[in-house]
Length: 135
Image (cartoon, rainbow, N blue to C red; front, side, top):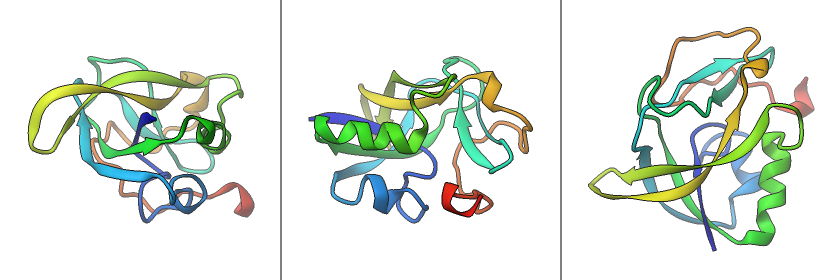
């Protein structure tokens, strides 16, 4: 089993959750141990986090226990395989604190950030995301 940290459209109540994580075990709300730059960007208003620990703000999200054979579906939803979209390991903490643990997170490169619609965010709650089937 793998731990996957999600901070945007894969969270409960957002468009990709039922397509990617509905059958995975929700472990709780967590935040990154270090700050990361997360913004809303692109013509589809997607939440995007850059793999630049130490910059930005601590990012809140959700932690899931995911079967390894389910990871390709999450990769597809997150655009892994397209230039500048990839998985990375990061350290997260529970809301109660405690020792950090490692999880997989989805990151974007700067080439995805055109245009940028916000400054750095710590908690994604925006509703402007346009899913692929509506673009």
